[in-house]
Image (cartoon, rainbow, N blue to C red; front, side, top):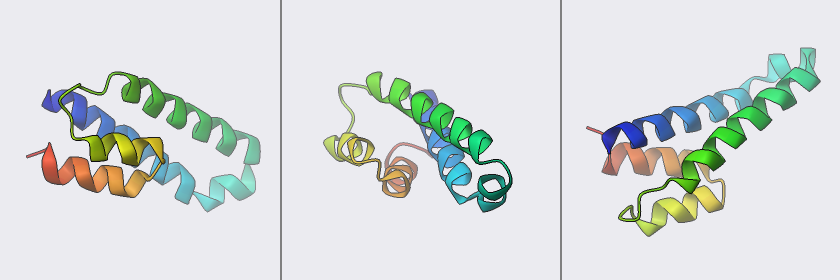
Length: 80
């Protein structure tokens, strides 16, 4: 189970990093959009496999795309 949460945390970190990459956004807007879409799709796929016993707050953060809150929640609750 920890593997799932580690994978989800990495996907969230990756998307946060893409959002923050203003250089890519300025130099290659299409590439930036592609990376955002890929990162979002990865999170959506992982969200579909969210364990039934996971905390409802995590589902809430993911539904609202509160990426930083979701990442902090995972790190504090599910990862060593």
